[in-house]
Image 1 (spheres, helix red, strand yellow):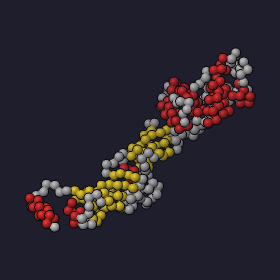
Image 2 (tube, helix red, strand yellow; image 1 turned 180 degrees about the horizontal axis):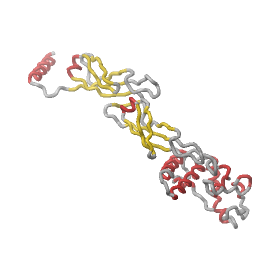
Image 3 (cartoon, one colour; image 1 turned 180 degrees about the vertical axis):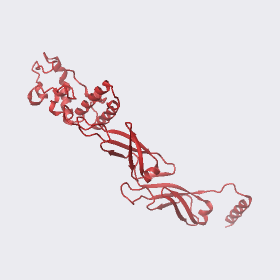
Image 4 (cartoon, one colour; image 1 turned 90 degrees about the vertical axis):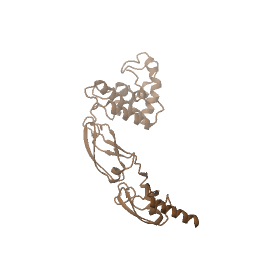
Amino acid sequence: MDYKDYYKALGVEKTATADQIKKAYRKLARQHHPDVNPNDNGAEQRFKEINEANEVLSDPDKRKKYDQFGADWQRYQQQPGGAGRGAPPGGGFDWSQYTQGGGGGRPFDEGDDFSDFFGSLFGGGSARAGGSRPGAGPDYQAELELSLEEAYHGGPRTITVQGKNLRLTILPGTADGQTIRLRDQGGPGRNGGPRGSLLITFRLRPDARYARTGNDLTQDAPVPLYKALLGGEHTVETLSGPVKITLKPETPNGTRLRLRGKGFPVYKQAGQFGDLYLRLTLVLPQRLTEPEKELIQQLAALRAEA
């Protein structure tokens, strides 16, 4: 019975954290899942190896026992009679400390998903997914790209995962990097177990018009020069539609206005919104006519005399 390097199976170091192990397992499980590789016996075997490695390394107690055991495995193999399955350890090596019930451990049945090595180390009863026991299927992961408007308004979207079209509803206020779980939309369960889940992560495309901070939005609002000088009403286009603002006479360039409740929707809080901040940017008139130039010159002369 060969020693199995579970760390190598997942492609991680022995110092890997629980999160690193989880990430490596999910990546490899997606890559080698039988549904993705139909009629590929090699992928199916690799998938079983990945699951066995994760079964051990994701469980702190099993991992600790495996780490202790690994150091003694070579010594055990070198003992007289030590290489055979179920053979008694030689040379005074106490094999029973690594098995259940003080014996050599019950090797797995032929129908079990885990190897003899796993069964000898942990005993057949410790396997959550072995034999005829039902087990949950693997989770699938997908990403869905949204525009800022789509995240603002929400609505139905269709996503294709594993060749299957799924319709979901985007809730207003969805954030970049946010993940939702669709239960029973993952991989099939083992031996009648439940299907896994589908984890969808949303990615929001950058929008040149708006900067988002939490539920608040900031946008530049161009204002004609004469309107900033004389004051009056001005219409600004926002994600919620056109909004009228009132400018005071001689409004400076860069003035910042706060519009309460005109920002981004608060996720799962109907009717609640963040604030919208406007940065007023003055727009200079272009292609001046001769009469306009004369008027500006007169204004400049008046300002010089003042």
